[in-house]
Length: 200
Picture 1 (cartoon, rainbow, N blue to C red):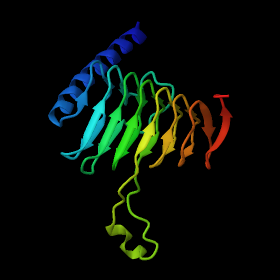
Picture 2 (picture 1 turned 90 degrees about the vertical axis):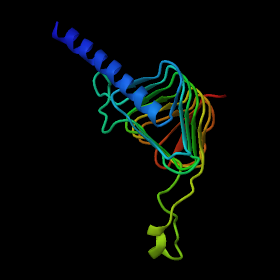
Picture 3 (picture 1 turned 120 degrees about the horizontal axis):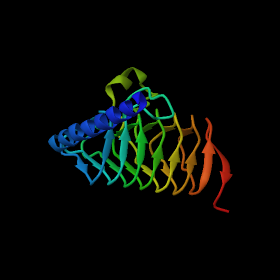
Picture 4 (picture 1 turned 30 degrees about the vertical axis):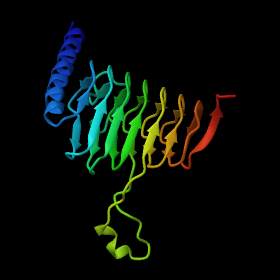
């Protein structure tokens, strides 16, 4: 009986947070398709000229209840540079993930992203090895990230700028993705290596 009551309370909480997030997204001009579900309050920020688009039937989960991993933070979408774009496709499931676009991050349809993943298309600063004392005053421009349809990204993955992850690929937990991933392959590790090619 108590478990049933807790489940009902959690469902009502998710409905409430979805309503709050829809209102907030409307105020800051985020494009939401139908039936986007927010489980818990997400952090969503953008500058005026940036765009954030979330496809239909996509779930952004910041609620630890019922999820099989511990989430260390809530979902975060940040497009803080002029004309930056975050575009998330339909039927995605994104759990406690940070997506930070300097330039462009495109996520396809039916993409699964496990908790505590970081997707960022730029460095905070330029390398400036010739004058590192001025590094603090610089900002990187970023390089676009493309994540294809039906990709599955494991927990605690770090995806860096300039990479394309092909359709149907799987990224193992704790992987650093700093180069392209071919479609229908399983990759993992740091440095990232090909574990198996399912396209053959």
